[in-house]
Amino acid sequence: MAVTLKAVPIEKPEDVNLILGQAHFIKTVEDLHEALVTAVPGIKFGLAFCEASGPCLVRWSGTDEELVALARTNALAIGAGHSFIILLRDCFPINVLPVLRQVPEVCAIYCATANRAEVILAETEGGRGILGVVDGAVPTGIEQAVDIAERKSLLRRFGYKL
Image (tube, rainbow, N blue to C red; front, side):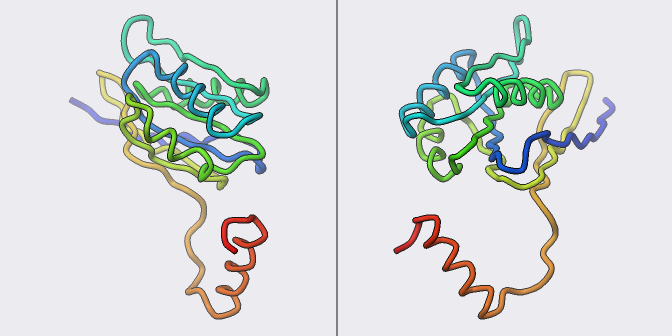
């Protein structure tokens, strides 16, 4: 059986975070939606889920029309069975990852980032699977004292550290 490798870039605005994962059941869309709106009231998101059997549709939901449209487009381009993508605006993945991990049908989270990202896929006659994600750029060096101070300052400006 032949295997073809593909890299599919995630299309999104710079101010949008993404979460890419794997689940296993058609009710994933509704359960992810409920988890997100419960975790962050007023959250702006779009999500899409690639159904891997039956009609094999891209199922979708969300609270922001632009993000829903982008999630559908990206999910269709990725096309890996039972994968899902969530696009977030004005919210960080750290605010929702704990509740997403508690959704019973979520099997894996591959990536949570605001960076430019590419999904690495393997395609066979049977379909597509996610091998991994390229998330951002290659490191340019080792963190120095000034970089440590900047990192700590950023975390405090965001309110994640006191």
